[in-house]
Length: 110
Image (tube, rainbow, N blue to C red; front, side, top):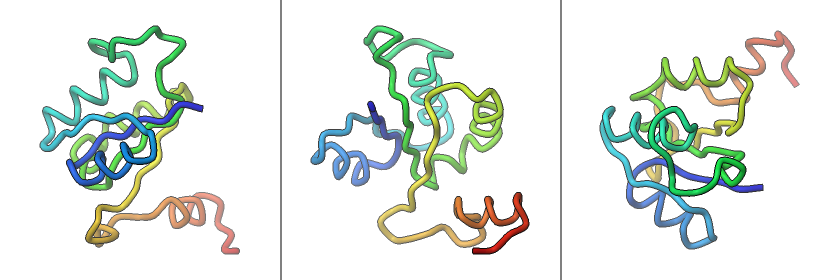
């Protein structure tokens, strides 16, 4: 399974050390451009369509700048699947984690 990361320089570098490619992007325009290239909506990553990432890792900060576009993409059910990770300083206050969102949607706490 191919992974790809979009976020701040430190996070992209950390993932690069374990073999995950990525794009350093800060601010809405850069993040949106990178997101569109990874999802195939605009431009491309320079790889064939069948080699596009299956999982897109976004930092919470990056995801926050393109929240509407991310939600719209997730509703399509297409690849890449999107996973958000906290930044080096930790979880962004006021932002739901994946587990919290699932608990809220399902209504069951495990």
